[in-house]
Image (cartoon, rainbow, N blue to C red; front, side):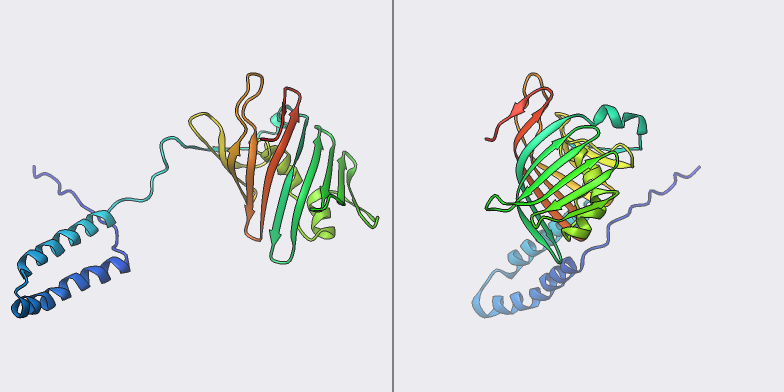
Length: 251
């Protein structure tokens, strides 16, 4: 019985590589002409060109980019029963920068969170209160510096209406601690120390760029985070953490 033929497939060469190969071969005639005029060793130069051409072809035939072995990606389905166990008390003080196509915000933030309440103060760079956001089981209240008071069912709806940019509070209260929001599907990347390095959820991409050192009573807490959506980007620097186990001062 004849042995089946092995099919070999190569990736399509990018246009820039084809241009380089064409120029390498087209240049051989010019090298030959220079050789006859000035005594250059055209054959040696041509062989170098051939070798470079082969290297380029082999490089371009490599497969798709492979995620480093140190990073593990996991798709996590919703787990509604985990919401309360994951939603614990914390306080943080930090700096927040927000940029959208129409609005910008830069200032400091103070946030106190429990399973049933959030109290968030946004400050201008000069330390003036820009907004106070308060959430409980009845809804969300936002107070501005005028003062003016606004109410809505969710922080996302209220901040978009009043501030001009959306604070994704439902997920943010988990994301800031390196956890996924348990109510929707999430994709999480973790490193070899089981620290979260990225989360993709509900249209947001969260990148964890720096952590505070791990302590005996508490795992490492994020220090620098970036939140990106198609129409918006936020950066948060946490200068101080406080939770039921430990307090993390600024570096």
